[in-house]
Length: 440
Ligand code: MEV
Image 1 (tube, protein in one colour):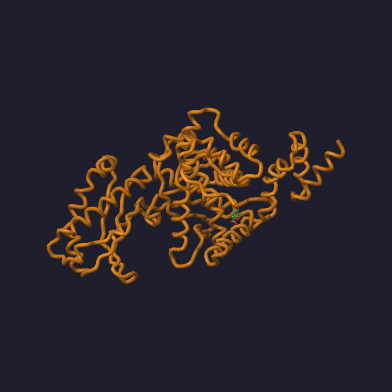
Image 2 (tube, helix red, strand yellow; image 1 turned 60 degrees about the horizontal axis):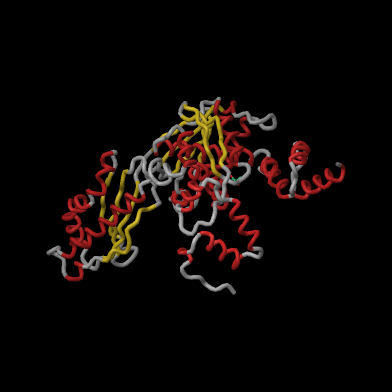
């Protein structure tokens, strides 16, 4: 059995790779080659990536694709998407094209409020705590002024600090529930710094508060941290058109298609097993743009799924209806994003992707990303209720299979043509390649 290692982070990159390949892989030389293959030849760029995290050994590439022709509020966008799943970019592009000549996507931001909390234990009277909290309001703001100064210049800062009594849920548990406006920054560092300052002020002021007894003077701060649940940092995106314009193919009438879409969304609203997959399809589009723009997709995922369960049962993020002969399809979801700070200036491709998106503000990026999610869902559900997804999906997957089987460029071209009219299966592709090799 491999022994634990101490001081791993202090080793050089080569030493780390050596240790790893020797102890955890069956062919250390081949493993080291694979790792080295993905180093960037430009040393400066590789060093930049090495320093993003600790113990970097190499880079894991994800393809960056472009979905063009997104008409959003009368402006055309080409959307960069970083994703490994074969059919996502193609599906987004198809939906963008479909809606482009029907007025495109309309969007609006419903709120930009960010949240953070100081969780603390107080063993005493809530009335006294309330009076104490009122008495320190100005001090909380004054002692965090050095942190809020530059955010205030950009029009942001602390919106509200509230005392919340949570003792019904947990003995002696209270919170400072705080809301912030962070403008174009995602704001995690700003919020967390403010919260830690609030915690220090809270504890310090309690120690000298004359009306507290000895127990009450010792507030125990458990933690101070932003929340990734941001139900008031909300964006809506929609598409609509007269039902008769919903002409997807000759195989299904616009009326039947509209009915099937509405029913599919209705199922995702009431059935969590379906809702999770329905929303996963939405997140295919959302995460790809979140990643391409250097934002935190884990934060987005956590916040979006919590929002999808806000009424007590996990449900669809999209909605569909026909009213007065107009089909409408829309999404509403929370997205806490940044277009300054973080990786936005540091990662050359993130910087370029933001430029491709016309250097959006955080509010504009919320709208673009909501559209990517809506388009993805429209593409997925429209396939599901008509042809099924496997046909398109396996066609997109064909190249992966051919690469896996070691097909050369000529074989790939011939077999891609062959499978335009034949069903793609793993077995079918392997057999067709074997047959081609036999005959040529
Ligand atoms: C696959 O990545 C996403 C879908 O399953 C989404 C859906 O079912 O709506 C196709």
